[in-house]
Image (cartoon, rainbow, N blue to C red; front, side, top):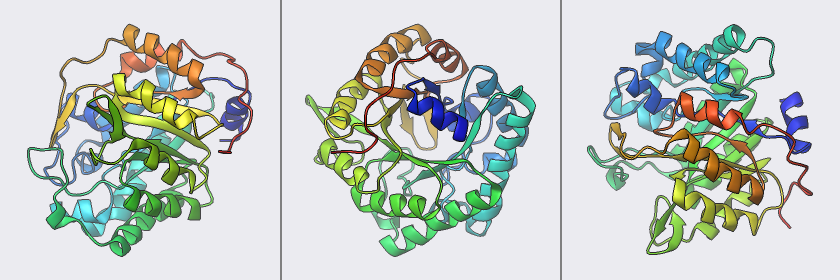
Length: 315
């Protein structure tokens, strides 16, 4: 991360990869009804390796290990709760192998994806409250994923789809304990003209931003949010945060366990949106669910010196 952080401080554009889970699905890897894409690390390791390699060759500076759904409370639904460490280390090692094979000596970081994902109602995208563990259990489970990722040698922790402050605090603490750089990716929705938390329609997105800043992340941004909600959400982040921002939206929608590839934004249109986000202070661009190799290749064309952003922390 030393070279990439230097580029970030100088105002250069870094390119994240695109979706891992939905790209696995698109290429035929099985999705589980409980732990979504987590078990694909074992079921389809060659496919996962090829996805990482393709993103690197498309220009990604940061690739994300397939660990989004690796918390014990997610894996337990598939009878795999005792394989958290194994699956996390294997996911990181596959990403590292892809970097060795495809980077050509270019600096590429491997990130651990850490989410506060909860068990989902089958066929829906909503959490199942009856299966939601206590905060103490959630924290221990997040620590377990972080510890395995650190053991495997990740360079960065990406807090992804942060949208529920009561669990966001736990994820931030688990990431901070690692001593690694960590970025916080917040998720939002537009409801009746309001930008709200992705998880709770009645929870203002601005409160999610305030919760995120308590953990003092290195980068704050908007991810797994509809393209049209991303710009307004970034405006809210910028009003409270002076440092570099990230943006990696989704396209389509989710019905557990499958992503619905509907109305996927064209790569050229994503680039047009990204140019506006750069003007707001975004310095790390990528894609989330529904967005793939062509989108990242298009975004990589935006690399260049955009000028430094004064100040890394919120006022």
